[in-house]
Image (cartoon, rainbow, N blue to C red; front, side, top):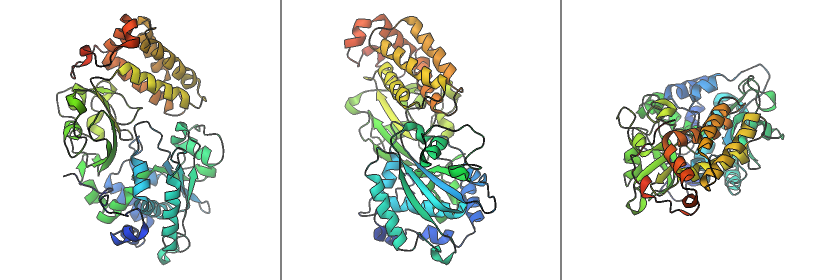
Length: 451
């Protein structure tokens, strides 16, 4: 059985409410934290090896230690709850069903960082979640966990929920900060980084929901014990949102020693692929990470077992690997069309580009038009190389990572499934009307020639 830290109380009815959460050990980590110094809490998070669970995987304790502490200037913690990455919904699950765990993590982190005013920026499409959070915040405040002089510590803290307007770009921390300030959500040039000049030009730390919730078990068990879970630099547990062609979609908590094959096929997790179909490919970290064909998903290029952790999934770089990303695990069986899925993702990134950078503003639209032509039987062979050239000129040439997020899926799809693109171009009539379960693509270990 997998280790469960964040979802350990999943089976308890009413765990979203304060009385039930408190009865089952809730806020005991906060009690422990307020007997520690803020510096000691930061040190425990460093020792835990916790990496940001929002996508980048940057060490959380190190990020906290960068926070500037100028005399007389307020500092802020901002939670990035703008979970807009397609295929990702584990933060929503935490906020909806475990709001007090999340608030306890926010409280401990606010104390460690000296944030008296902490903000939760939540995506606009999560229309019902703010009400749940507001209720939980009110319960916590009524029981003395928020407000003035918490537990007689002299520390004051308020948590505010801010609803976004539904923009993927506001998942980028500086665009989120701009939106929180009431401006258009355009990413800022860096430096200065938010740790120096963030919201209202004050020192700011931005972490996502899962990262902050993980602070609770870290304080409860200690950073060293937390670091013993997992493997290498992939410590602790990770929440994964699973969708696509699996028997049991949902949110799962793993300890990152689990192999990809076990995760997909075991009854404890995804329960295998419906109708006995073969695995064709997977996008393991949300729509922005490279798609990987089945043979390279289950084994690395060296023939070693691939595990569900940061290092193993990225083994070999983007030529043969991918990323843990935000944990949006999207499974494709052999009936799925990679060209169509890539086109759908390109349409999303075209729509969500803020337009500030010309490579992203123009390039995402260009890629979508080319992919649309190929999918609907109007493409040319030269379009494949043109797609490759466009994505290459977007990657690394934009202010924020949205350009990279749009380029990587296209690059990986061409790299691993070039012959599927060629089939669409060679068979334009069939490309418009075909059955997506083509026998030619039913072999789960078929890997087309790389570009």
